[in-house]
Length: 284
Image (cartoon, rainbow, N blue to C red; front, side, top):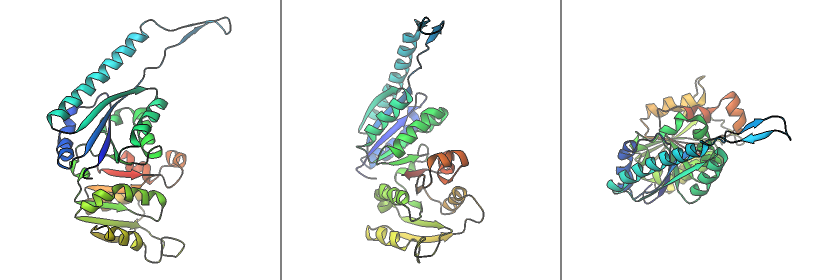
């Protein structure tokens, strides 16, 4: 990921010291950082008296004070991150994005249009709505790859061993393309297929050979491996095999099936998003 740019999304509780290890990687690989401190705007506490159209609407006087307090907290977090990045010698710009959830999604999507990958900070997980909105914007509304669980796992940005969970799908292909700079620099790329259907109308008569040949042409050191799921959910099988390969990063397509279906019934993407043990780069 040398000479690339990253959009880093952090929350109001983000600790700048958690970025220090990543900062060394960013500086060494000349990665430009656009850091956004995200905050959901406090909801307007509208009170209604009586029955419309004869009732009255009242907004408490102290709501503006709550807005100002929230803005000051976000600005303080942004200043702390900016000071740390400057001291570490990282080329970066730091801004605050505070809006209603839908506005946050639009703002993240616009910033992600001109970046190579998006990194979600771990502290965002403490606010489910904020994390889900940021993840949705990055995956569905931007062309960039999305990296989760990279904080604390600094090798994820310059991985030596990459585990690619492959199937013959558009999402998986986009994930591999988003991760290509990292794959080219990695010492070992494992192209993993789980329970492949070895037919011309399934995963091909020699599953994984086409994408392996393409990656090899780009200078990647690739090995193709086929694994049985063994009754495990595919997400759990991916984690197990990636751990066996001592992978620094997992690369995979996101939401091959309908997102609502995965939210209700679960699925591989939801499993990999919820887990926090392994860094994962996703693309849809």
